[in-house]
Image 1 (cartoon, helix red, strand yellow):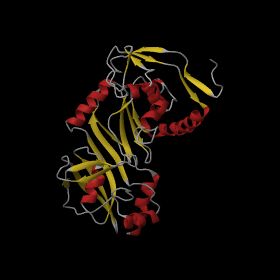
Image 2 (cartoon, helix red, strand yellow):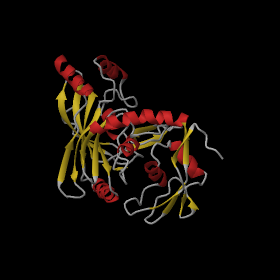
Image 3 (spheres, rainbow, N blue to C red):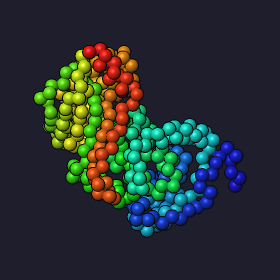
Image 4 (cartoon, helix red, strand yellow):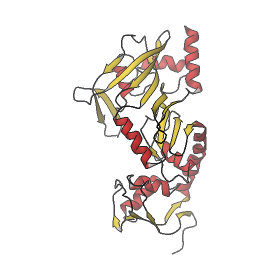
Length: 323
């Protein structure tokens, strides 16, 4: 059967790939995203559903976790011109991420993630930071997120380049030895005596797939520590250190304290947001500016900072001038 001229074959023939120790432990769908560069996520799920991808000659589900020495059969995959166009547009944006890399060695990559880009494709988004980094580093055998950041939050994001690195950093996260500091611009005058908020958080998922978090006795224990960085006429720049890592934790804890973050579309205050929009703020003012952890290979204590973007710096200068 002749191939349609409007189609491009990404994978020319059936491939049989054996999973290495470094590749083991990841989901088959994520593995295929790294092997089939430029193929839409929807198409990868389609070949999985149809049973065209096999592991050890058997059908598997997208959430299947690969084991060392598994043999993966990857079929030829064709994409149409219609599907190719958006990919090339996205790859243009990918190259811009290079300048946001603040640290990289053979086991680890640290990104100063821009606001407005999701860390992972999903929830209606088929392209995120991790897919972009895999396109930037096509020869990397392993690239996985160590943790997550909300789409609208900017700043430090750790990406492991080895399975052993991922395990080591996850262990540090479990033991709470990684310190992540955030900067948030909040409404009003933050009270100096408010240094710790311990309020359990309950996550709800709406039918649309949107996640909303609220303080509830039925929620999981959550703790954030705060300190005042700078005061303005009607706002405060606070430093936040989340002891636990719950979804939307800083955003909900600041709202709970009566000081929602500027331009937070889920937990914010419309009047405060309007004031901040008038001076040029166009995004959520929450930024992961610093991280401290033990380097997985050398064992040294590493501290990495991610500078605020120009928009945030300009907003702070304007607020300072207004004082």
